[in-house]
Image 1: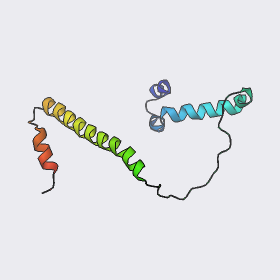
Image 2: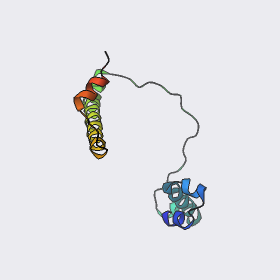
Image 3: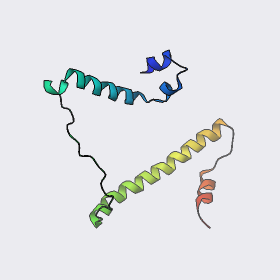
Amino acid sequence: MPWLKSRFPTARALQLVPEILGLVSLSTLLCGVFRWDNLGSDILRDVEGGLIAPRLPAVTASKVRYYLLSAVLISVLGFVESIAVAKTYATKYNHLMSPKASWKMSLPD
């Protein structure tokens, strides 16, 4: 698909279509034409249609404990990564950046 986009750079609609959508559409079309599902390929069959009603999952203490560590680690990694990116841009654009100052600015009074 990238070769098709480079061949027609002025076709705006083509530039906006993700490559994976083209790949899935082409694969589906070829599977329907050549009947690869009859040759032993695993093809997704009937899928139930309609919408399901949204509902809250059951919350138990064991689930909270299980997900809490992951949530804390993701939060800490996100904070550290944002500081690293801020330092990179501060260095690149010659700004002064202090993690302590940004930490103090993010805390409520």
